[in-house]
Length: 254
Image 1: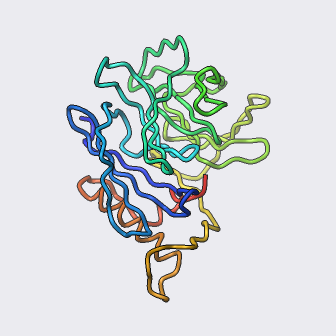
Image 2: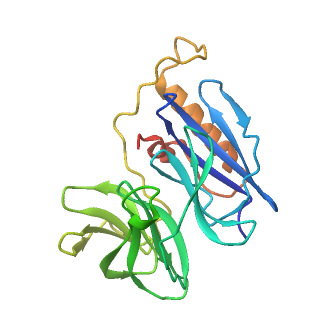
């Protein structure tokens, strides 16, 4: 059963603050609310966006927007929607032209690009995925092929000059070279399914010029923790095992 809420978190460069997004789904569309650190409160966006959001509950942060798959209420067509952190508006992003997806698809991020991967529960494998090389331009969708077949595929957010750390089938960490189509698998002992992968971020943006008065003893780490706790409070209705450390990667600068 699809969850009735959608969440996202990210840094708004236009206002120099972190924001937490909460989308409540109903039959006619989705209503978003925004929590900001400057006000330390929630604010409801006075608009019903006519989409039924699909798939994962946590949105994908790319190019200053939080993304989900969705169906239009009007005609049931499938699109990607992006909630802009700066404008606090929703825009549509078209899927690859003339696409013929016959299996479940997932929206994700590959490096700095929006991406679409296929997904299967029935041992069907795939050897390609889509990336949008020019954000918001439907003609810029391009296929990337992989020599290692997958049932589920995602990027870990970690890359070197030559390799990207990819997660294959939620069970293998693979350093993949997309220049020569070679790869090698990391061995990390007996680990079953990877629910998620986080990348440690040494430095987060310094928050300045806040309108909200705060205690002199409250540093940026305290403020970030408040944003994380707002995120976790939304998820408290689920059975997910969540801790604040695992969400610090969500707060990195795009």
